[in-house]
Length: 180
Image (cartoon, rainbow, N blue to C red; front, side, top):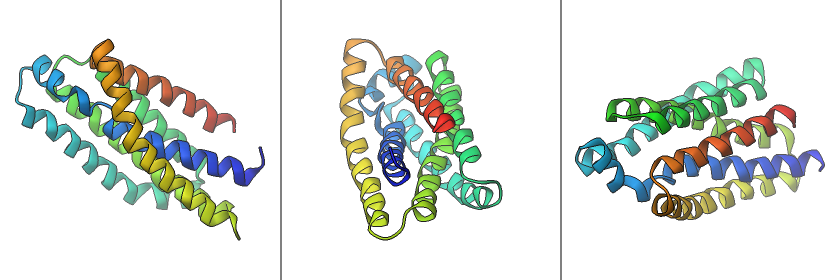
């Protein structure tokens, strides 16, 4: 696969992963409320916590990657997403869940900022709009597909299965970014 197509593929997949990290467990919110013995409002706040960390992290990944390159911060971000997912799998309380969601949000910010930077850095001419289109497509697919996957996993298994799935996907992309 040539470089422009590889960048576009990663743009699509990493954008899907970023949106999936946010929406995958939405069908599990009632189960989480029951598991943590708290209100649904407290569980919904975990979405807000994720988005705050996600937004704040984007302020730092761009400047850092301008200095040290794109790959290391991207690997770091995906590793944070992975650590957050693993911690959530084993959490027994809402505080740990929230702290883990913060880690996931901080990591997810890297995927969104750095894949956009990679498109600007690596693609030119007619490939650059195609790369940007891959971001939009990945965004839409991630928002639509991941809650369906999350709902199926929750109904077949339990809410932790969402984060097991997310951890597996994070491992795959950590390796893909590392080697490609």
